[in-house]
Structure formats: structure tokens, C-alpha cells
Image 1 (cartoon, rainbow, N blue to C red):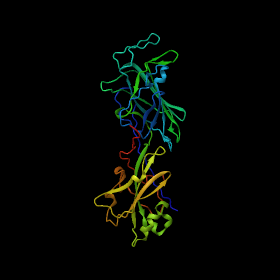
Image 2 (cartoon, rainbow, N blue to C red; image 1 turned 180 degrees about the vertical axis):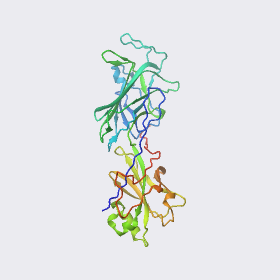
Image 3 (cartoon, rainbow, N blue to C red; image 1 turned 90 degrees about the vertical axis):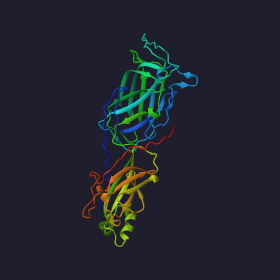
Length: 385
């Protein structure tokens, strides 16, 4: 039986060099994960691919109803974020850097004016400011340290509008990929003074800002988004398929059969395929909201009803267009994959390739289809505010 493949061609993501804290940084490309503090009393947090917080949220680490817990200090100066979604496929790293954006502010009321540690007394110019703060981020994948970065000597100052101080860290990943199902953790630690024995300490009256303009962001340089919508097309040689049913791919048989029963049967038709590729299990996407729309000089009318199938765990939706019945040139049309009424991927149908009755279609190593990831590298759905 002739093999029928729809090859997926993923767009490459650009790498961005790292910079120090509080400097301007170009927008990094890659897979964005959002950080949330789950328990301010213990510094437990999560990173998630689908949950940017829309509203500004500012948990005080170690904040309890009766105030801050002063000791041990590092319990109030560390957050351990754990990835809350399981990867369903390996995610290889590119040559780019991991980027972290993290926000701290100082409490206006509770910040003391001095810090004494082995005779060191850093000055505090104003309440609501903590001087010379160091921040370290360590990424671990599958129990192995995958990279870390540190910035030193940044004054944490709360702005007049409550705006925090931004820390931007970047480092090259020290592993080749994120294996499917591997646990991922991000540990962020901050301090002012480190003793000769390696004890890190400092003032504890910090707020970790989240949401709105201050989302904690971890951007991983991988060649995949959390959720990608893809658009493909191919020209079907119905003359050959109608003459030999073994040439019809299994997922097209119920749709092609009525076309072959027409008198006369169309010689060829255009298959338009929309698919959803995801990196994590249980993506928040409703497959019933997927649709395909053809845009061109005239309305495309000779379309089959939409049909769906799954290949290698990837859900697809497709339609077959008898463009000859509409007297249309497919090259003048653009296919749009629609999700919740919005176009999330598009493809000019001049990219469709013909199906040769005398030979097999190219296998997965060839670009049988062109993919367009048009502004849809991820769909971010809010879980909470």
C-alpha cells in the first residue's frame, strides 16, 4: 500500500544572548513558562505553560497573619518552582540561552534600616529599599543541574506606584534536551551577605511580584511551543485513488469514497489539514473549536464536511476541496486554521504538492507540506487571577 505522510516542519526559534539584571533585554524566543508562588509560608511554587496571571499579585515570602517569620532567613529568601505539566515528547534545546525574569520589592513598613552580619552594615537609604541584593537561579531537569546564573549587588527598590525591581538572568543550558516526562524545577535564591562558610543571609522583608506586567517568566530555548497550530495542504490524485482503493490513506477512505462515486468523479482535489502539536499532556484546547476556512477570489463551496483523525498522538482536522467543481485555482487561495473563531495558522495553497500515481509520496524526511505558525506558538489560558 502506498504510504501517505503529512510531515511536520517546525519553525526555528531565534536565540538571544543573556544580560545582567535591570538592563534592557531583547524579547527572547522559545517556550515560555509562568511562575506562581503557591505557599508564601514555605516558598513553594509552580511553573506552568498555560497560566499567565492577568492581575497583579504580590505574595510576601514567609508572610503570616502576625507578620514575617525572621528565622531561619533562607526560608524567606528562596522559592522552588516545580513544573506542573508533564512533557509528552522530548524537547531539544537550541543554541540559545535560558532566560528568567523575576521581580522583587521591599516592604515599606517592615524593612529595617540596617543589617549587621560579621560587622557588615549595608546602608538603607529609604524605607522600602534593600541594598546590594544578589539573586541566583538554578534550573534542574530530571534531577540534574541544567544551568544556573547569578547577578550581584542590585538595590531592590519599591517604586512610588508599588512597581518592583526586575531581575533578568540568562544562561546556556547544560543538557541537550528536556526528556519526555522529566521533572523540571527552578530554584531562585536571594541574599545580601555570604559568610566565609557559605551561609547566605539578609533582610527578609521581600515581596515576590506576579501577574500583570510582573509575571515571573522562564523562557526555554526549545524548538517547540507549548501549543502550536499547523496548516498543511496536499493535492490528491483522485484518478489514481478511485482506480485503486489501496492508495487511499485509511483516515481518508470514508471521505474519498463518496467523491469517487460521483459521475464524473473529480480527477484531483485539495486536502487541507489543520493540526495541533502540543508539548505537555492535557493541553487546555477544545478540539471542537478547530475549523478550516478558505479565503480567495470567490467562495469555496465544493467542500466535504470537516473530518478529524489522530496520527502519532497529534489531532488533525481536514476538509477536501473539489476546486475544479468551483472552477477555482487553488494557488489563488489561502487556508486558515481557525480556533475559537480566530485564525491561528495559515498557508497559501500554491504550496500544495501533487500526488503522483506512479510513485510514493515523500516520507517524513521531506517537506511534503508547508507549515505556518502565525502568531500562535502558544495559547495562554488563565487558571486564576
